[in-house]
Length: 339
Image (cartoon, rainbow, N blue to C red; front, side):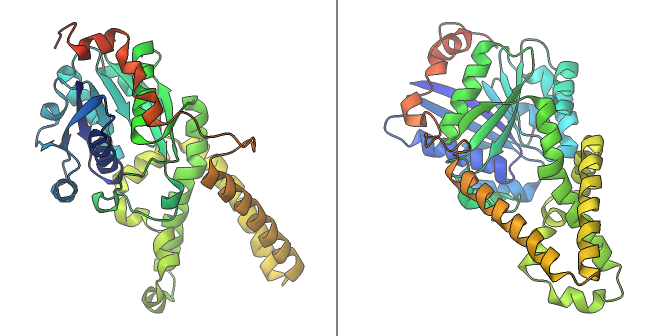
């Protein structure tokens, strides 16, 4: 049985969930590999919460200590800390280490990888598409982590061009271990989509709350806040302003394009309300609701093409076959030693 060394930097919902998913895999009788997890988070509260959940075997204070000698390093830090992490960990990474970067944008991370990492380190951008049961729940905190966060979901993989085939296979198999189906995606296309699915929702929540807090009715409105307001504005609770700043600025052209489209839609809906046009408003709401229900059905089933096919190979069927061949696998088996 191979003992695979994992370093996790960042113990929010995502990093802690990865640790819990690996812990679940370790406990399976059919597991042919054991994941030995070392974790670090600069935020003491996150570390304490993750430790209570048992997300890692060890928790260390130093960033380099968390990644030194590790086969796989997972970057799940706050976004504003990501580039500094690349600079800091580069000298400590072992030859042929695979770095999985969960940052919300991929093109900046690919640039940082080429700038700071040697060619012997393989960086792959990853974005989890989470279990449908968590689509409406969970803040970005360790307390909201779950071992099945990735089940019935996908792990989008966006590798640096320098990543070799063994690293790509390793990342693909790692997705299956977490419970997700791996999919390779173009990073340029993904960052364009991220502007609509990540950046714009955050921006809309901030803008709405800023408008409300500056309005004359704020003294009364703040007393009436309920889940609808909390869900829309959750980024102001669980995401540091520096992280939001980088998410929006690093992807500003794509975000601005979607923002312009959204403004056009809002202008149209405002005009409909001012005209008291009941039929037009009802038609808009029905169309949106029907399209949303269709999306939700596909998102819950994972069947986007309506072919009735399963989502792919299961983790149990895969047994991380990719780790059993290639240079990285030989090193894990002990055929070759390097540091």
